Amino acid sequence: MLRAGNITSIPPLDVLTELFEHQRVVILKLNPVMDAMLEPYRHAFAPLIDLAVLRIVIGGADVGSHLAHHPRVSHVHITGSARTHDVVVFGTGADGVRRKAAGDPLLDKPIASWKCPAAVANSSTRPPGTRTHHSPALSAQHHL
Image 1: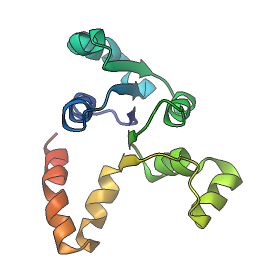
Image 2: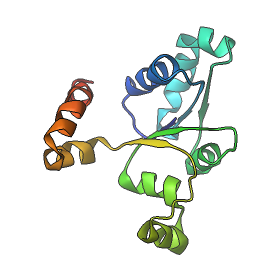
Image 3: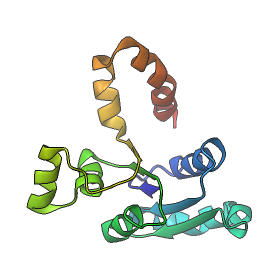
Image 4: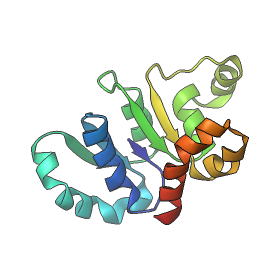
């Protein structure tokens, strides 16, 4: 999971969701703005770290890109801007722009990408069943 935000309650919720709901081991990559939370998260999740089902690291876009494209990573969950999503999925520069326009992703694995403001702004344009499906998640984001 690549965490771009600075809301301290979201990374633990994402970790628990990935571990228990999706039954995936997790490497949580925090954005450097979350540096002060690295040790508290490691302390809180020490039993899961000791079981080798969770690792927590910190780093910038270079670390995130390395992790997202690593061959042992089978699924990517990110938060951040549409730009962050596009860089992870399509790459950077002119090649990234070309790949996006062609619908030719560089990332060859499933990705869940949460861009909260875009999700809220675009939710009314989705079909009614989709709005109902996403309403609890959007409501939960609002209350965090």
